[in-house]
Image (cartoon, rainbow, N blue to C red; front, side, top):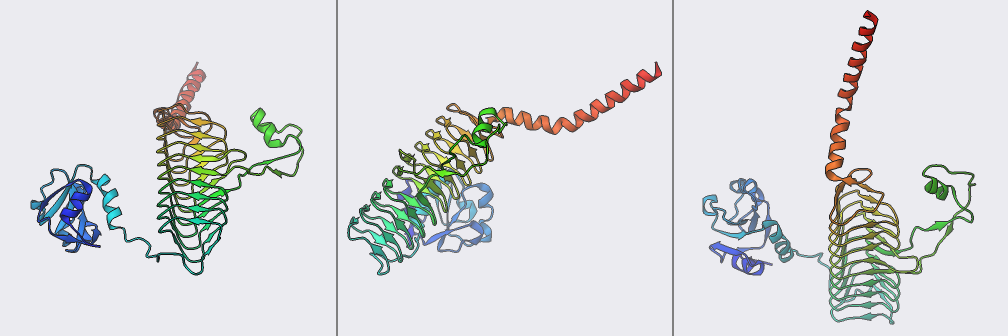
Length: 363
């Protein structure tokens, strides 16, 4: 779909300058832009490539000299990266799926579908499921018994929601996302080596080898409004109570949220994050890529954990942490610097020992 520069500026509450009647049908990097595409030149370092393309218009930072760049029009954005959120939504062509219920889909007669619900090929919706108005269930998806999905949901290819899951409005699941699998919860008839090692911090004691018995998951998963779950991410259902994910939280690809975990509102869980069972994550928390979190702890509101951090204990609200184990970021950086100095320190000690030894021999 094509838009004029004025259309885009009005939709994003930005300022249009120059010939705002110019029409664009898509977005492009500055060097790749053709006359019918809007160049994304949001920083001076990007704008220098405009002369390699043929853009007539671009989105620029506030105060940019668009005429000096040879443009006929521009959109000036105080926060260009934030402007990308609305701009990419306007220009998103979608997946090209059809509307309505595909003939190959299996929808239980006991399911309730709201108005304008779309169900893609080979998808299954079980009895008792309630699908909110305007929701799209893509190809090869599964919606379990008694699941409730709010309005304007969107499941990409292969998305799965297990029985009795409660999903808020405007939920978005990327390909292969799975919510409602059984928790990874097992126990042995007698105290296991793992239990002894955890209690003693290392000693397995006299525990004997045993077989594992599953603790079944009787809870489900409750997800708030405006939540997104990335490709092949998994959220396990709770043992007795539900695993919970708060409003507006965003979960990246390949994230693991274990049974009984509670995640607050507006939290970001980046790629390869793993959260063990019964942990509580606060609001506005950011766990960067490959952060690991042990079970039965809490992470307070507004915590930021840098990439690769391993969290083994509670973290109070507002702290920025890094490392293994997680420590305050400035402390971890001091540790890293100290480790880099170790070889020089050893060399100095060796030199000092040699000097002292030679002095002793001369006496």
